[in-house]
Amino acid sequence: MRDELKPYFRENRLPHIWCPGCGHGIIMGALARAMAKMDIDKKNTAVISGIGCSSRATGYLDFDTLHTAHGRALAFATGYKMVKPESKVIVLTGDGDCTAIGGNHLIHVARRNIDLTTIVFNNNIYGMTGGQYSPLTPNGSKATTSPYGNLERNFDLVQLAKGAGATFIARSTVYHVNQLTDLIIKGINHKGFSLIEVVTQCPTNYGRKNKMGSPAQMMLWQKEHAVTKAQADKMTAEELKDKFIVGLLHQEEAPEYTEQYAKMVANLMGGDDK
Image 1: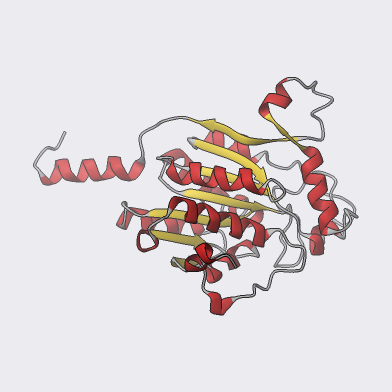
Image 2: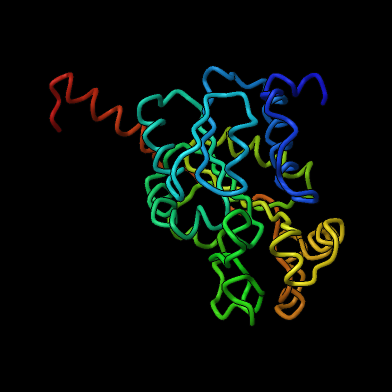
């Protein structure tokens, strides 16, 4: 491990136990490199996760960390941010953890525009709990709970977050690791709710069932199917049919909830009840 990254890991917990070929370690590495580039204050940073393969990352990262209940990472993160609004709070969550059991928390955190940076490890499957399909599993894909193909339409997480009010939305892949690192930095620096979807591979529970080949071939699929917005603008609907757009996809300014709450409390303490 590079010396500049060692302060951000609990080295006694390594090596990690993710499956060989899993992309989650790449995402964790991108987060660590982003923090190193920012020279982030570890004592003023919290990393919070729910349950699932992605959520194991909090055990390896050397910050104030919380490994919380399934789907509740954003709820715990909200409580942490309300108590310590000066802290940078980063949420690590999976596609099932975030958009199924945690979907209600996601839309309301986005609506409130709470200053959290949420990184969604999207491997299109419940990897740890048995290979069930999630709300982000593509239509037609196989899983243990859809052995003949998933009949449901999957969420477009970018559009879901935008509709709910998120003020920073980006998407990348584990293949595009330099882009991912830069987007994490931008997301952490953004004042308001930031969501970064990361397309990653699960060769064990998703790749095998859907005959996607080796982990390297799954990453090659990411390379070949990801396009930038500039590229997408020049493509026809037919050309975009099996592609997805990466990069910074939405950013705006809006009142941030914890700041507004602090102002209200200050006004009330000062006797201003307006």
